Amino acid sequence: MKSRQNIIGKISISIAAMAILLATSGCTKLRARDQLNKGVQAYKASKFETAIEKFKTAIELDPGLDVAKLYLATACVAQYVPGGDNPENVRMADCAIDQYKKVLDTDAPKATQVLSTKGLASLYFNMKKFDDAKTFDKKAIALDPNDPENYYSVAVIDWTQSYVPRMEARQKLGLKTEDPIKDKKVCEDLKAKNQANVDEGVQMLEKAITLRKDYDDAMAYLNLLYRERADLHCGDPEGRAADIKLADEMVEKTMATKKMKAEKANEQHGIVLDQPNKE
Image 1 (cartoon, rainbow, N blue to C red):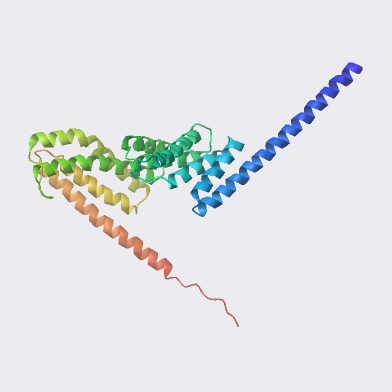
Image 2: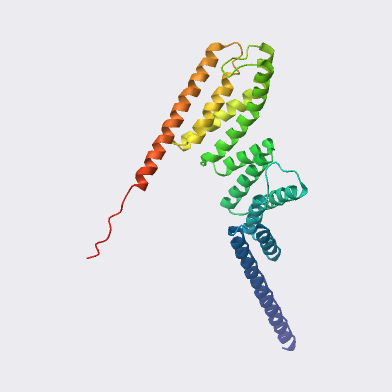
């Protein structure tokens, strides 16, 4: 009997200890949430350094608080200046990349993973690390295939990577805007370098417009990519002319879509609700 009582006593002590541990754990998580909320308020007030410290404290208190990691990454991005390579700027970029990737290494909710993936893609783009940016844009497509902006983002990179070498080649040849590239070797080299990006970009934008019929920004870039493709028709004036025609048509479609959206917005703003009868 006495040994049974001792066992019961030990169990009671263990239960009490667990209760204290759980209470402490619950208290710590509440403190973490409090720091998170204070960080959000500081972020909204553009007090980014304060926000960063609050988010860091929240994570220290509750390492599983993925939303705090996402907020910390966002606050670090807010302090990052695109193109700057000074130590502080690099530190802010590294902070954001580290926190975004920590979110992706967890089983965070899908929406949080999407935001982290898109955040990484955007940051890498601003850092001019286009291949890394495209990698995460494509991961965002895999996570959320119905978001047209993910396809658009890939296409913007495709155009950026195609436009620069094309313009460099044209400038070296002293060509005017409307002139085709008649130097066979230059054209073939450019085609080998740009064709895959241009084709991918066109496909991505067509998909984006399928998902969002009035996506005028996607239409504008599709016009630009058609013009990129036009310069890759080496020795094929008809192919070049066909792409120029497609580009011009896309300009008209973009303008018409912008006009339609503006008119629709004006109509919505022009609605006057019936005023209640004050009599």
